[in-house]
Length: 504
Image (cartoon, rainbow, N blue to C red):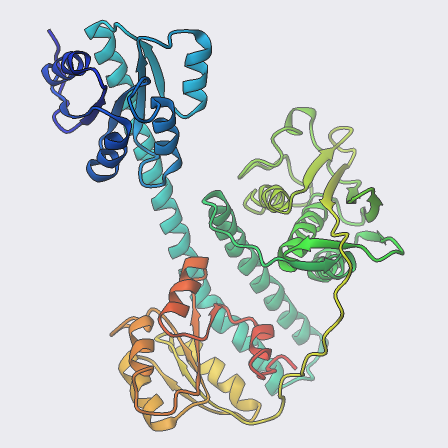
């Protein structure tokens, strides 16, 4: 009667009635499914975790745990939340019962008695849905792997470019204006590439819930000024008139200072990009009750009415300035919205139409707690020479960083393999080791473990300097024995925390 190739689909049939359970299992078995059984909710939860069925046929009325609660627990557990649940009942047959089951996470709801053909059709439909969901999850996983690999491959050449530029400025600080303009161009566009890579990874991390905010009490002035500094060169380059109006009173927000600055900088860069040269951009902030509203208005290309609702979508762009080809990846505004929402705020946009400019409003909750007393912090030691080992299989990256650090009077050596790093550390006894993760003979994690086992004083700082810059990469580095994790290209500001002021 039934024809289906379902030998690979495991179904857990849960029902406390021996007769009903037998009838449903027989129908499913004859249709080619592999069926296991449970007669109560507790056993169903255990079998779901241990056997990982593709689908659970779950009766509502069970002797120990209500089937609706069993479904809720299954869907709330990361180990079992992808298992499909087909809820059934002969007692709870009203519309409200079905709604309650579906709201609780059930993938479908059938009222008993169920015709065999109807049961098989519903099971097959849910399994098809499950296959599509698994394929989408696999595509998403591969996308994230691709982005991580892409970021690593892009960061590797960006590292020596940025370091070589700093080295040139150290070697010859005073150069003709044309030469300095060329250096500044290299620096700006290197920074732009770094931001694009970081934005791609940020979107991926946020969509997976893997981004972690460094929460603290942040003054409005501090993150606004940081954003203005970040975007100043683009605004100036395009000849825009920028007006800034900030409140006289000191306002505070509870959030991540880097991400808050990123929100405003992305909006400013977006306005600069989509406003013709010589245009006007205004940014202001004012308090509204227990929130602060940050408004950014421009007289740029504006937004068509049909695009207002989609402008914050991933990879979405609404037109482009007439003097520029369409540039960017269309992820800046999507990232803005996600970061604002993570801070408990909202972002909206209005535009009278194409060619009439646009206005973005960011509303963030204020931190109204009393300001903590400032604690004096010791200045990092500057000027003391350190022994430094730079380990990287990219010889350009290792050599340029070593040369740059050497110009500041540090004793620097390089290694290009894990074995060389171990030998050099034992012989040289460095104060700081910058260690790449992707080495040709062994991973940086393995090298770190071996360095920590050397019979030498373990007072050196071990820093992962790598193109792998996601949060799980940082955690893996710390677990392997590293003291810190720096993403390529090296941020000279982070080097300053080690007393290495190479950007001076």
